[in-house]
Image (cartoon, rainbow, N blue to C red; front, side, top):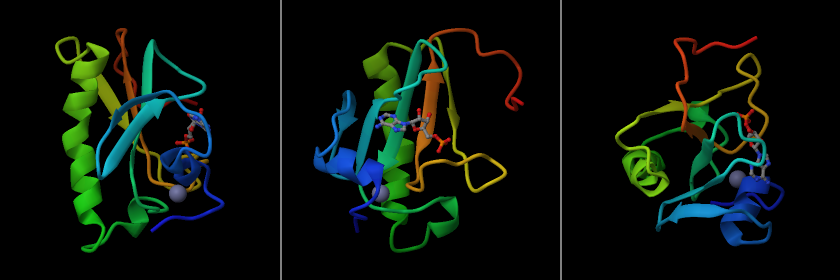
Length: 118
Ligand code: AMP
Ligand code: ZN
């Protein structure tokens, strides 16, 4: 369920400080340490899934709850009307650094047409 060496599992357990913006039984959402936009929140399942490559029938409930959480985070952050972008990096070519499935929730300015950055 949890990986004791995983930084995001530690955040879930409260062993590492974070600025939590939303939390329920399945999901938590906290501010990214290095925001790329006025609103940059990481939304994660409360179970250690390494990446999208590890989603399966057993843990899919958590991933579904993450999908449901985005609109709640949007409301809390006040961007449900202005809009937002959600990005999930999976694996080396995508530059995934933290091996605990997480979705970047980005908003608070015009994000432009690009979804790929060098
Ligand atoms: P990725 O490159 O998709 O794996 O993104 C990892 C993200 O986690 C980066 O945007 C980091 O800024 C962020 N991050 C790493 N450690 C923490 C932390 N302790 N609290 C909040 N965000 C973090
Ligand atoms: Zn983890």
